[in-house]
Amino acid sequence: MEKADVAGRPVHRTLEVLTGAFTWVLITAPIWGAVLAPAKWAWFATAFSLYWLYKSLSVAAMATLAYGRLRAGQTREWLDEVRRRPGWRAVHHLVVFPTYNEPVGVLIESLSHLVAQDYPADRISVLVAFEEREPAARAKAREIETLFAGRFAHLWTTFHPDQPGEVPGKSSNLAYAVRWARRALAEDPAIHLDRVLVTVCDADARLDRRYLSALTCRYLEEPDAEYVFFQPVVLFHANIARLPLPLRVLNSMYSVMQLSRMPVGFRLITQSNYSLSLELCRRCGYWDVDIIPEDSHMFFKALFRCGERVRVVPLYVPVWSDAAEGASWWRTTLSHYRQARRWAWGISDVPYLVWQMVRCGRPRLWPRYIHPLHYAHEHFLWPSHWFLLVGSLNLLPFLAPTFAASEIGRELAALASSLYTACLPSLVVLIWLNWRLRPPGGKRSLGEVLAFLGSWLCLPLVGFVLVALPALDAHTRLLFGRYLQYQVTEKRARPRSELAVPASTLKPSTSGLPHPREAA
Image (cartoon, rainbow, N blue to C red; front, side, top):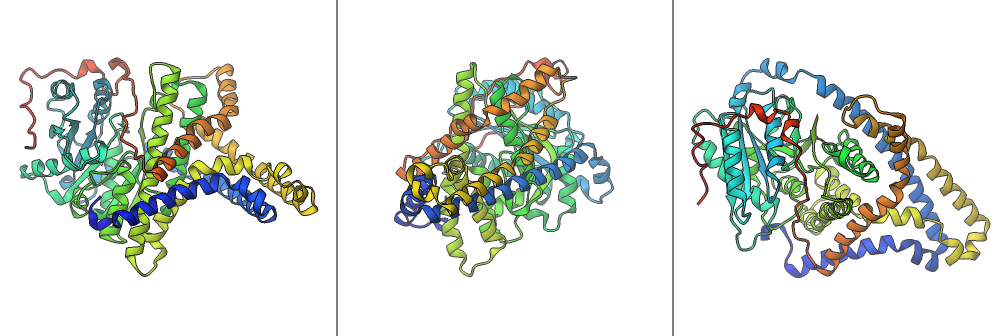
């Protein structure tokens, strides 16, 4: 992060320690609360159960609403609407795939979905951003260039060199690649730089065939569109059939939780795959080169630099991504843990957000305060919710038996239990949505349905091991200054016969492309 955006090192480090320490205060609250102030803790735990009921109902209602909009978005003729708007041909798309040590088959599958877009190919440029330190990067680049020659207006590859002061990862790669792409696009007289939309994709992102048409339509509809981030619905379903049943449930829950954020403005923050204008990238100084959570950080950086016009707009079209997957069930589980820990490392942005809010001066709750506060709230809840739910009032009979046996203690315990029971209908809705979001695969047998329902019984254990613990790991690392380095999630490529555009139609060019230009 640029020095002007963060506090001095002593203050910033103090904020990091306080952030990590607050998480430990929360997760240990069922113990120290019951010992030091059992009555106050009982009231707090009951209030938390009421909050959890609200959150459960809210997630179920918003996810159901967003599901309906997603289904409508998948059938809407976006391109027809775009063509009725004057000047639409001036909109150009730059799709960027930052990658490191990803199987080339994964990249080919993602690019095949771009080939299948219904948007005119001559208005699409593609940049595959490799890391220079990857030994196989140039061989992969040559294979991609050969297979996809002539499919887009431009097809480029870059090789990001390691630089002093940078944290290797997606953010530093994007900062290098998109700056380079802007210079390359400026050489094409048919492209207007102020009408270029950048779509950032993970290497395994399979864009719905209507994605670029929907993005163009929403871009042309929005006032101040050059300040807007567009967030699609990310579904971790591309390889879900290959996962163990408990992990299928976990990834389905990730998808539904992301879906539930779509209709609510202050909950929606960029995640994994998103789009924004090239001009906004330039105005806010591109991506920072020394952070891990590049998606949310880029939004907050733009928000604090460019003001309240910066916002995230939902794009109700799907992007299918792979869940973490290894060669064995153990490797798959370990990969899930590491991925969740990397996601939870977003907590490292909280000290930056606190400092930025202090710099804002006069408090204004919307949006420069409400977005960061909600982001911090979600990250603190991530590792602590399991301990607060399980601990709740269950430890009072052991740690404060006198209060637990009192009339008020019994009444509060009964009320909290009733409130948690009232959350069950919301869980049923989430199970139904998970089933509906699964990729189509013909009629399923009774055994498959029963196995799907039974796997939900594993959710409390899976949630502890692969949600709460990796988040606690990340927060504890921040507390002690053991900073996380970017780790690529293990992926496995599918057979090329299953691509959106079959490999047989990706005919290698006889002449080939000129070797892509590389930055000095």
